[in-house]
Structures are given as structure tokens and as C-alpha cells.
Image 1 (cartoon, one colour):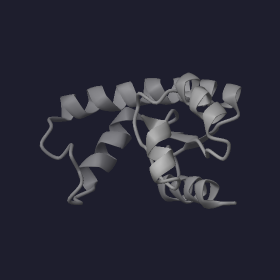
Image 2 (tube, one colour; image 1 turned 180 degrees about the horizontal axis):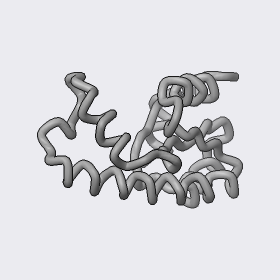
Image 3 (cartoon, one colour; image 1 turned 45 degrees about the horizontal axis):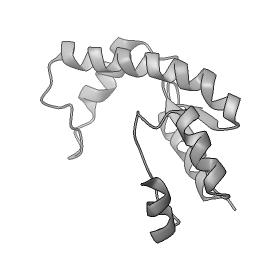
Image 4 (tube, one colour; image 1 turned 90 degrees about the vertical axis):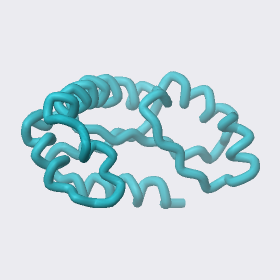
Length: 117
């Protein structure tokens, strides 16, 4: 499916926590110029992340109706996944950008990486 997306729209952003490095390595073999990176927050305190999520009032905050406990469950899952990605991404020469302490800076760095030639 991802190959078909690439063939029809070569500059395409795909986001998802199921696109693990070992799977994306297979895609990278098929798509010569694939730019693949991961973002996470392995070094954040869960309660700080909860406060950050609660502070964000944007229209795309899909967590706004969740309880603090539900959000903390997702944050803890995100921390575990981030630790995995931080360790695994380099094995496949993929970048990992940590958003724990400088969220906007990490997003800028990821954007620059993805859009560089």
C-alpha cells in the first residue's frame, strides 16, 4: 500500500505508531529516496506531558475529552514506544528526534530533515 501511495504522490507524509523501523526498512529498500524519521518523548515526565496536553487547546487535540488517567496511560505507552524507537531507529540508519525538552525545536529539526535534498 505504501508503495502505491509513493508512486502516486512521491512527497507524502505518513504518521503512525505501527510503522516500526523494521517495517520501514523494507519500504526504504523499495523507495530509493525515502526520508524516514521518528519522533518521541522518551525523556519526559508523564505528569509534565499530561500538563502540556491539557494546556494545548487547539482544534486537533483529540485527547481533550479523555480523563487524566486515560491520557497518562497513553503518555506512558508513548514513552515506552519512544524508548523502543530511540533504540531501534539508528539500527536502520533512521533519525530519531526527541521532543521531551524542546518540542518546537525537535519538530523544526524533523521538518528540516524531511525537506532537505
